[in-house]
Length: 248
Image (cartoon, rainbow, N blue to C red; front, side, top):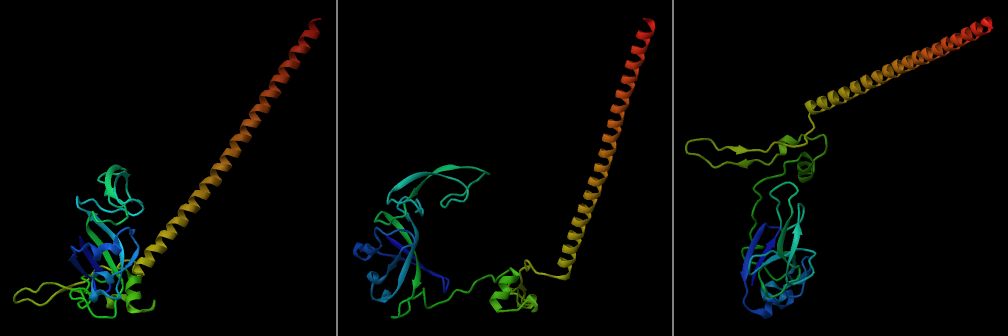
């Protein structure tokens, strides 16, 4: 079995191939997200603690968190589930995945170092640091990284990325566009948006008042017409009664 060990503090990863099953026995019957001591791998790993993050079996099927078995199952997966990427909107598909319990049928087991040992450094894992290629892009995260206040100008602290040098040309660097940066233009745009919203609300209120006024006027006219019809019908009835009595 291969162990893919990652150390987030340095950004390094190392792949170990271990054939001795005795060394791997402490990992068996453990679930994903379980912390396991790494003492069984050798003296250099004393004091190290790993967290199991996943793995793949010998046929390449991935382990899935929450599936409490050490075998393979077929699940109906949709958007948001691990081990599946939908190709169309709303698409679901039945996929084979492995359970979250580790056994000896895995080909690769992914581990993350959560506690470093005191004995010594592991070559290529804890002794070297891989610098991040890109710095933070969001304004609040740049402030957090450099411990800046809201009054400080974030644009001066952007992490620039050097571009590959060309013969006979000056060295160039590239900086990301800062997101969520509050500038006078942004504030002006916000004020304009709020003013437009207020204007729309006022217009809607005026139109509603005008409509209510028109509706009241129409109802009043309809009521008056109804009363007029009643009066005219009562008058015609009275005239007909008078005519009939005069004939008698």
